[in-house]
Image (cartoon, rainbow, N blue to C red; front, side, top):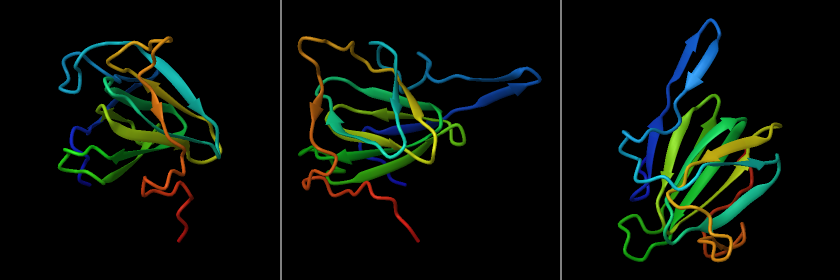
Amino acid sequence: MEHISGVSVRKLRLLLDDRGWLMEMFRSDWEEFEKFGQVYVTACYPGIVKAWHYHKLQTDHFVCVSGTAKVVLYDSREDSPTRGMINEFFMGTKNPILVRIPPLVYHGFTAIGPEVALIVNTPTEVYKYETPDEHRVPHDDPAIPYSWAVKMG
């Protein structure tokens, strides 16, 4: 799959032994790392869509640590070579990946299946409660050519 300009995906490794497993989610020596803002976890219930939003300054780094999430990106940037492109990523315990989402790229997600999806984000900026870098449009905004409906067939 061709990625939206500035988006990157890193396959994460599970290190298994007799006691369980360990997975590195984000390291300062990886090319995806710019700077540290904060770390948080967000939950999405089955049947719920958390979309759309973008940031003007912040780069997000998503890892789904429980359940499965469909993360969707849309590039509406005027000067982008991938303007109008959609990317879909299915991430979670069965597909451990890190997705880097640059500023100004719309993104959202939904849980796939019957489990809550937990996404850990390591953004480059701290959340500013008085002036959040959070810009939203509805999940069904007609300006974004994407349907969150399950694709049967």
